[in-house]
Length: 255
Image (cartoon, rainbow, N blue to C red; front, side, top):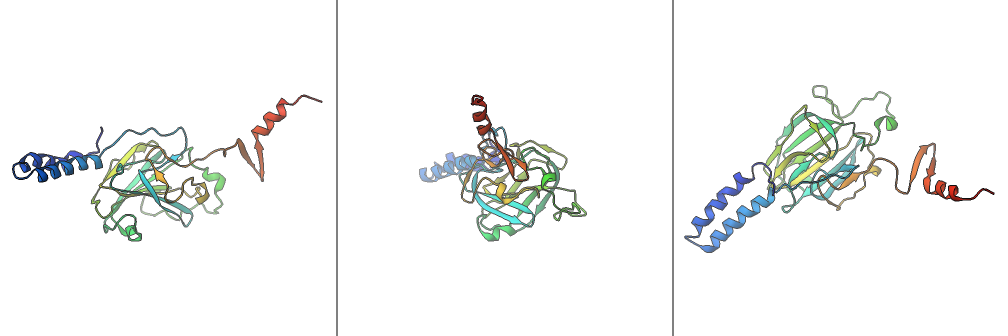
């Protein structure tokens, strides 16, 4: 079993205390062993295999946030204590900026968690798994309302948010790093929430999951860009071609 960095630092004190506690109480010794084993479980880091296509969930857990913010869509995944706490990149991207923001430690599922301590991983992405920005660009000046004049440009953002018990956020990436879809980008010690702020080209209707859905980091597809199911391809101007119909016509004998 793989473990996230820092796992043994948290688990070893309890595991070392267990045999000494046995001198005083078997119950206390068992509690110490349980705390050590539970800590390692919190930090477990199983391998994941992304599907061939699609934007994947950044975290294990449950979709707790799905909303529009101006011309952007935000998806948030809440991690409970039993979930894997390693965060993964939802798409191929280049990291442009990392920002740590101090804040509160409210429960990550509450509205107050928007003011919690967090780390923003800002990135630029031209992933083929995302909708084509040029096809949906109806702005006249092309300016990004989320851009900041004294910060590197970015068109997407993954935010690691601390919760009531999560006090440490550990990003694995730095500005200039290239992230592959499904690659580990950090972990939050003892859980919390991970948000994805999608590029402006993504609409709320593009998201294929809903609030309450269960997610598996690096494997669950939250957005699938490409031809819709059923073999139909939109050619624009309200027209579509159904390949199933074409195949049926091809089988018919000429009159």
